[in-house]
Every structure is written in C-alpha cells, then in structure tokens.
Image (cartoon, protein in one colour):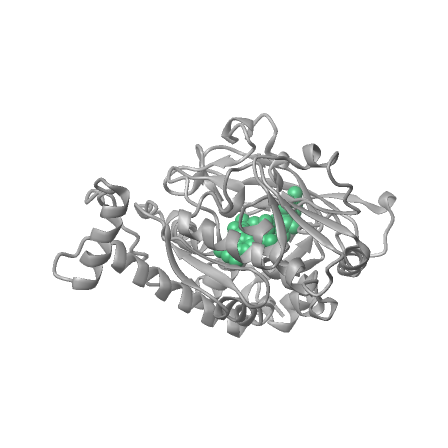
Length: 437
Ligand SMILES: Cc1cc2nc3c(=O)[nH]c(=O)nc-3n(C[C@H](O)[C@H](O)[C@H](O)COP(=O)(O)OP(=O)(O)OC[C@H]3O[C@@H](n4cnc5c(N)ncnc54)[C@H](O)[C@@H]3O)c2cc1C
C-alpha cells in the first residue's frame, strides 16, 4: 500500500510513453519520487514500444512483446510504492490557477468494456504538470484504439491486408517511412508479384540526415526492390497505381488540442506544438512543463529518444528546483542526436550528430535487443544509465577540448564539413548540474 500523502506535491504527467516513461524512471532512480504524488494519465490502456513497429507489423508473433497493459506495468513493477499511479483517460482540458500555481487536468474516462454512455468527465488537481502527449501518425503506426485487445486486432488486420495486397505504398521518406517500407520489402522479398512503393514529397530520403545516409538508405531500399517516388504525394500516385494497402506513417498532428483554451492557446505554435522556454516551462506557466514530440524548444532540436532523455533531465531537475525554490537550470547549448534506422532485418544505419557512423546488419540486431528492455523496469533503468553514457561520450566528442586528440580531430572534421565555424558553446550559459539529492 502507498504511504499517506505526507505533504508531497501533486505531480501529473500526461502521456505514458517515452517522455512520461523517462520521468517515471528518473524519479525512481534518484529517490526523488518521495517528494511527489505522481499521477500518470494516458488515453491508452496499454503502453506500446512502437519504435519497433516495423518488426511487429511484419511478424504477428512479436506483437505481444511490444505491448503491455499500463496497469500491469505499474503493478508488476510495484510503482505504487513510489507514490505513482496510472489513470487511463483522454485529457480534454487543462486549467491553471495562475503563473506560479497549479491547476486542474480534465479527462474523459471510459473503463474497459464500457459503451460511450459510460464516459465520465473527471478532474485531477496538479501542483506540477508535465505534458508529454507526443504526436499522432497515420495507421497503423499509431492507433485510435484505446484497449490493448483492440490494438492487437487492428495490427493483425493490417498484417492480413499486407499479405494479400498486390501493391503496397508507404508514405513519407523520413526515418519511420524508410524503416517500415524496408521491413515490408524484406519480408516479401521472395514474392516477386508484390510491388512495394515509397512515396515522398522530398527530393531525397532522410532529408534531415547527412547526404551519405540518404544515399545509403536509397541503395538499400533499391536492393530490396522498393520503388521510390520522389517529389510526389500519395494522391498524385493514385492515378498511376491502385494500391490495395496504404500505409500512412507520416505525422498527422501534434497531440495538444486539449490546450486550445483561453489560458494556453497563446502557448501553442502554429502547428500546435507547445512552446517551451529554456527551462522547459510552458510559456509563463512556471509549474507546467512540456517534453518530447509535443513541444518546440528554443533549440528546435531533432526529436528522438535521446533528445527526450536530455531535455527530460532538465524537466526533472527543474521540477525539484521549483519545489525547493532553487535557481532553475537551462537546457544545454546543444542536444546530442543519435538515430539508428533499420532497413529490413539485415541492414541499417546509425547517424550521430549529422555524421553517418555505422551501417550494416548489426543495427537491426541492436534495435531488437533494446526493444527487449521494454516493460521491464530494471532493464529500463539500466538503459537510462547507458543513454547517459552515450550523451557524455557525444558531449565529449563535440566539445572543444584542445588537449584531447579525439575531440579536436572530430571537431576539425565537423568544421571542415560545414565549411565554416560551428556554434561555440556559450560560457555564460548555465550547464545542467542537477543537485544530488
Ligand atoms: C514508428 C516510429 C519509430 C521511431 N523510431 C525511433 C528510433 O528508432 N529512435 C529514436 O530516437 N526515435 C524514434 N522515434 C521517435 C520517438 O519515438 C519519439 O521521439 C518519442 O516517442 C516521443 O515521445 P513522447 O513521449 O514525446 O511522445 P509519444 O511517444 O508520442 O507518446 C505520447 C503519449 O501521450 C498519449 N496521449 C496523447 N494525447 C493524449 C491525451 N489527450 N490524453 C492522454 N494521453 C494522451 C499517447 O497515447 C502516448 O502514449 C520513432 C517514432 C515512430 C513513430
């Protein structure tokens, strides 16, 4: 049984995925959970490791291992002893009592097996709020299904459509599109009658990554007999081919409509992203933070798991500092970026800070291994440490240490590539040095 409140602050986290999960693990691993009563709200009954969806849409037997009921996750890992509870509900509104105070989160709750008449509107008070509600993609990447059983049925249906389709079109030439089309083409590589297409509005694949990564991905997809259509959208292709299975992996919206009210509307960018300041606070609302894909920061960093970890560190530190009335920390001047992209089960690439680092068959294995951590708190906590190490190494490699041959060599190469001086670190900017608690 959880201990009584004992003057702890009410912390509400919206979203139980990568951003919300980071905070849960950080609070536990540092013992700072003792300072809060934490309520995690997610509209889904389940948590899903959709980062590996390319694998399990092609192999039904993997689906179950990539999805866990959130209630089971909280129970199995005994999160109640860390003063944490999970609530399934779709957040519909957030209010604030003032810039320096908390407010209320309003959500719709529909218990498993209920019909729409059973939906109840409920309120949770918060003193601190972290919004990590991410983005929505087209089916089947992200789902409108709220229950695990329905989500599994949906994925199985997609899988069935995929098997019987003569032509498959994957929309979007970013990392998600490349991974999904690669996985499908790999699965059906012996089936010469099935035509697999990738359509992108861009002139290149992976346009936010370096050109050699784009070229590598294109070569690998061609090897898997994928037809890539550049400078096109799905509609313009419809006259040329009549796909009987259409995948839409591109982002459709940012999940922030519940902030479209009198209080928070001004904190949203035109595309719906939540604008945060360099302390990760939502505009002038000092007790409200945002993290992950749903927000835009002054650094406008590439989104991904590693950036969530680095900025999550700022959110966590500032939650504690705010509670203890200490000076807040700003985000680091540079966010380290690393991304591993699989292209079928035998190929892939890794990019770190705009540099193609690695290619080949190890990448799918690496990603499959990291997926195995999902749902196991102990393994996830170990992963958190590994991520910190990766960030430290990248920090070291990309900083200007004239005495270090490795970092200065890396730095010179980066400067040569840019053809000009890169951004120097601002010595006046406070670095994150979270107080040890
Ligand atoms: C297919 C795919 C593959 C990826 N692969 C990689 C990779 O290999 N490496 C990498 O670094 N990054 C990868 N990414 C990106 C990475 O997954 C995202 O950056 C990360 O998921 C962002 O986490 P988040 O917590 O901000 O949002 P999300 O993961 O989108 O989670 C948001 C959560 O909020 C919940 N939610 C939304 N709206 C509401 C609401 N109104 N009420 C209640 N709950 C709500 C959702 O149900 C969800 O659980 C991938 C993304 C996709 C889609």
